[in-house]
Image (tube, rainbow, N blue to C red; front, side, top):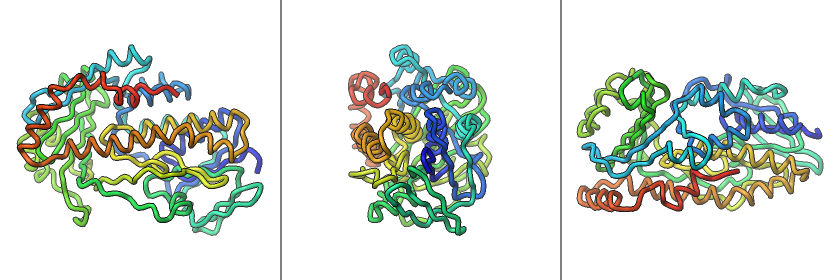
Length: 381
């Protein structure tokens, strides 16, 4: 099975990995648990570090054509008072690529459309792994088994591959839930490429243009983990965020109920290792993070490029995955921990503490001059 790589999961990390493996002469095959490839999903912010990775993949111009370039971002209170601004057009000049808002489905389509030699098999649920001196063998629920030189677990936060390698690593509940929606909406923000996040007491709302007339939005609220995940009516959601100024109520109002989803937010504490033998984890399977920094998809794209680089250097699979881990673990740990901390601060509920928090944020040096911020979005592969 020389040069054959098995990839579990056909999400962003799996598709991006396959594309990079093709570029360096490997033959990937993707196994997806679902019966079909995903064509749904919400929106994504691809920060400069992600568009830098996409440039390395040769996809940057097509990404720009299928997304909205974001020129400025603001952090505000629920009443609309500005706490901080990030001039993303200046960061584009500094880092060499733009930050964009893009539909997840658009990114999936672009990645999948560039695959030439990769076979994608749907309806394959991994149940076991076995490794020999020369190959790794994947066993699936449908009775099929397949062997390869390397197996990549790109199957997300609920990774079956991770559960085989590290079965006692539990998910961590954030303390809040998120609603997400896509809506047709046009105003000066969508036209100019302006994004914002508004903080209330135990609640947040984010607005990210996907085009001149399409918006991806998210709304978070503190909750208990044992509440059932169920659909909430649009009317209830509007009422819950009634103290937020426009365009928040208007954006929710124009969103169709079927296009609003609710999800409890989890991550997991950073793993000590991402691999065993010929099996390696990437993306959310390796370092699932809360969405507060908008880095989940960005990190998956980075992972794909770096893992391919390690293999291209002529290393055997064992050395390649160890080099990949060495390159990526500290960065992933930084982002997971900073995102977790950001969420705790942003989701504060006590009104007095929220006032103090807002005052501190407003009087701090500019976010985009913060060293950690630059480490995250200004990262070059």
